[in-house]
Length: 317
Image 1 (tube, helix red, strand yellow):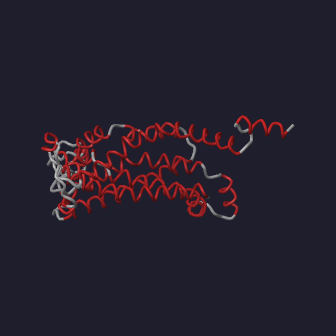
Image 2: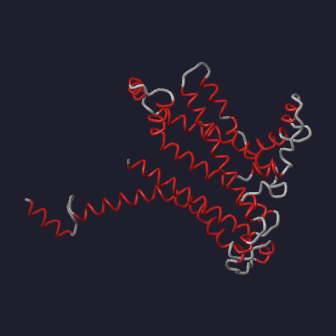
């Protein structure tokens, strides 16, 4: 009977179920179906992420100005735009400000976020309500937050200086003094980033089994010892993700700085992100603005790759 079926299959040119050709067709159909489901996401990523990056890279190698919009012609200048921004007198200032702004924001955002996460880990009345209030700075539009903080930090009629005046402290030029302005901007960004750090770290703390603390308490590991030997190793992967994502986000902060100081005074709060904005949309030197953006993309990409590496390692473990 099997021989008859085999002869019939050979005679009709069709493979019986279970043969190599049939399995190959089913596998091809399954792969094609999978690609059809993924295709919209691939198209979306290419149109809204891939194309802008390619276009930005191309613009950085051209003399792209406002006349290009009318003529459609942008002379090819190679790496002249990169040379122009690197030799610009404020390049070192913007790099230093970017580093200080990023490091200062990340360190204090993480420190306050971890402290609040540990605080909310203990159950107490209204803890859920207070955690929801903590998310408000994160939910508000950034430009609205910048406007409110600009009023608070105003030298003349600002709420903060009025409060300090109660104690006889002279008004502080929070946003107009080159020495103080960067500290003020960092402080506002810390306030904005604390909810994100608290939320993610709190989720990581919730995943630590309580049995570990109970077992450690029998050996006398309580308080700081319990944190160092149980809590910190358990949330280390979460800490890495929080820090990397925080760095990538902070590097490209524009609206807060523009809303508070506009990059001034005397470029004391100018970062690579705001400098790229001003090069492109204030001075209309789109080629140089694209070059600054590409430097920022490279730095962000390095931290993004670190994030992907840590995520992959966590999955493997």
